Image 1: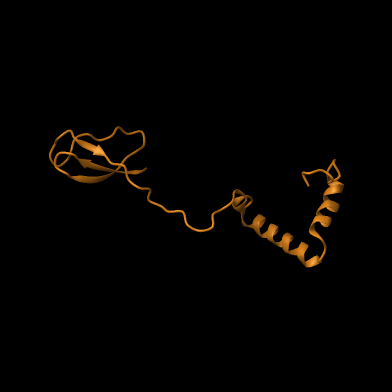
Image 2 (image 1 turned 180 degrees about the vertical axis):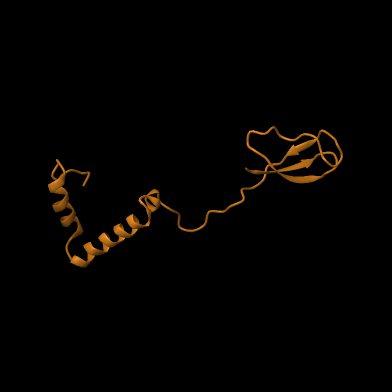
Length: 103
């Protein structure tokens, strides 16, 4: 459940309230009883830092990410051209023979 910040326009009383999204907003100030208790617009409670993430980072669990890193390093360790090795292996399993722009 989100936490909403409220402030009374009459007396200045401020309060954070834990409410459901579907709950009606509060209107009566608990301090002075006036009907000027309003929900405030506040900043988000988190920050996104770093280089970012990709949708493929979390697919298939940790084993899939480790397997992809291993296969990339294995291609480099063979010393062959990665484009040649990709087209050779893809040609056998694709109907286009890996000669199209999708490979």
